[in-house]
View 1 (cartoon, rainbow, N blue to C red):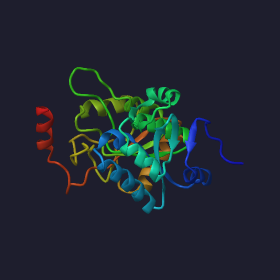
View 2 (cartoon, rainbow, N blue to C red; view 1 turned 90 degrees about the vertical axis):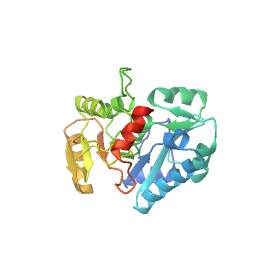
View 3 (cartoon, helix red, strand yellow; view 1 turned 90 degrees about the horizontal axis):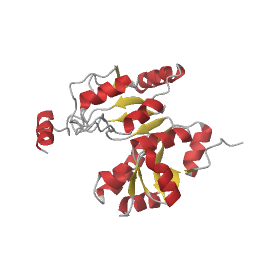
Length: 250
């Protein structure tokens, strides 16, 4: 008897087989494809991300909504459609029901991807930068943060996007009980830049160390997500002062 999944999930056969056999899977979000990069760089990135995961012996599962269907895993033709169509929308958690009912297509944000990955039984999700608390007095808080507070998925990322208020974002995560781990780093990375000067809760230097903390956290009944923050390589990182000056000017 196969594993039972929610009826609203449309799971690619190889992803379904990996789930049923207990093989490793990494979920990928798709707003970076629809809204993150210009064409055709977005398509190249989407295919390269899947290839990197395949090369590690793991099944990739790019998550998106196509014609109202919530999809877990896309084939190359579907990725091309998502990357090259001009009428795709950005879909966060609140938009999933609307997109399904109206038959819309779009890229899923960190929040929506986490929700869908968890519903499918996928525990690891890789993305670029998460959303967070915005700068200034607007009070704008990304839906990614509440999702991290309530959805038990390990999110591998490059920290939060540099345009955000990083100290406030870290404080929000602390309040919500979300562990922040630094991959071979003691500092919270800042997306384009290697470091932010902000400490992480714990450093992990190996996959086994990260997995041990993830398992221990969830074994306690603590059902939040966990951030595993991988700094941008120093060889391609932007100087923090240059990045900050540009952001202030913008």
